[in-house]
Length: 243
Image (cartoon, rainbow, N blue to C red; front, side):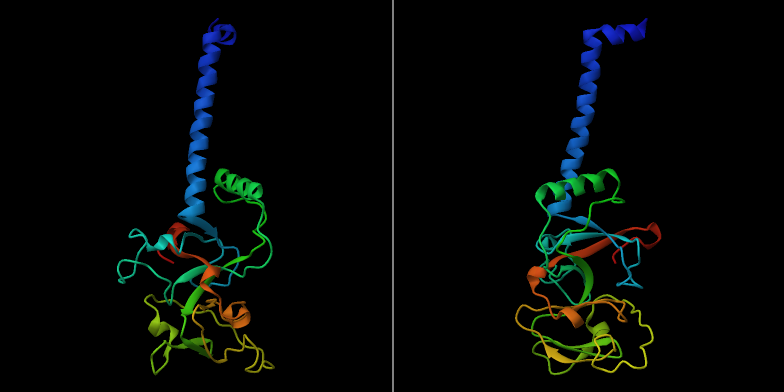
């Protein structure tokens, strides 16, 4: 009898309809907040390759903040006026700037699908490809490589140091054996002649130095190609923390 009342009562139907509308409005509000935050403040990156091993591994999930917003005190780790600038040793999200970006409706659909599937499923990647790389040299620096280790002479300095000495954080490299026929002219041979960076040039490399494209093959990148900086690894739980 009660079920029939719910079926034929206008008041019951209205109550049920309002409940559904409230649930949909709540879900849309959560999604809208997620879309705004992930677009303008902080967004997630799922690692789908091994170019940053051993420090970042396949399947890791990172939070990345745009460089402009990384100046906010919440994200700042710099002592320069509380602003976190692009610094040596940081992991940056960089684009090579090729291709056309997806239409807005595809970007929205991708964001919705990723939201509903907890980042497990998404549409095809943006035509402007994005990569995680480590910043090793800044504008005005001179950079070279010996035995896969980058050596950097900072601007206005008279001597060069290894990348590890200039980085505020420690990290490891992955280096595999070089084929015997490779000479020092091959980008992945472990050697690179010294080159000086221009006023808006950054040199970024992979932690896997054996066979990964980076500034050794692309060349230096401008600041406009650096989309953001990795600030936190939230998955897997056993490696949670700053990457």
